[in-house]
Image 1 (cartoon, rainbow, N blue to C red):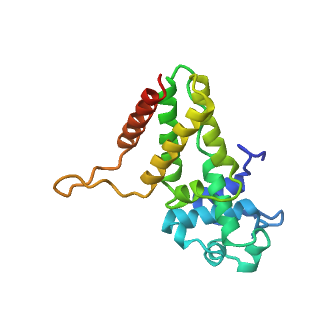
Image 2 (image 1 turned 135 degrees about the vertical axis):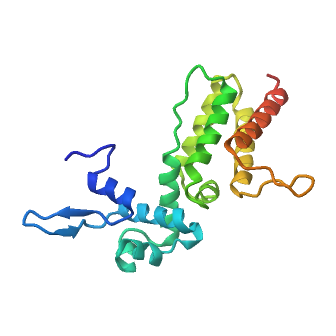
Image 3 (image 1 turned 180 degrees about the vertical axis):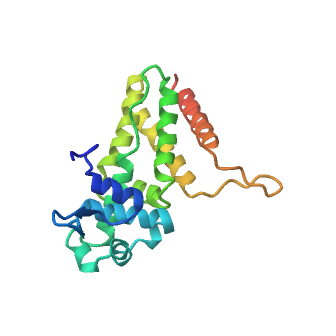
Length: 212
């Protein structure tokens, strides 16, 4: 059977069920598919989704796959590289195709909400992605798309960088999952609408400060 969206049926089944991919032998029975880097990254994300980023170790991912730690080290140097690859996979799935008739300000808001929806299933991955020191093509691609939106809206590069930086700082704070404490001790519910409205206020202030 041919791959779907670049994934084999065995891998798609493994991601959905959380079980190692298997294949049917021609003479009956099953055996585990050869381990791949994709399998390791997917297993790491399953651990994150279940227990958070702090739970990800080479040992925990090996246990998730039913293999020994040395099998993981054959593909990655250690936890840091594994987590970086996990961040890259989640960030690369953030949709950046936006309707052309959407105002530029709402396009920026849509990107922020899409980032939230992509990262929220994997606690800790979002903050780690935004704080990576090394190359992070997918995260850079998100920032690049936002800079493109602003350039098409007529803003110069310096102002655009300031706006995107402010939005990333705002989103980083959101990822801390600490709702503001209101008078009386009540916390504001952390909904998509609250996130979007905050981004709108920030973008509107930028537009005034930048003179448009």
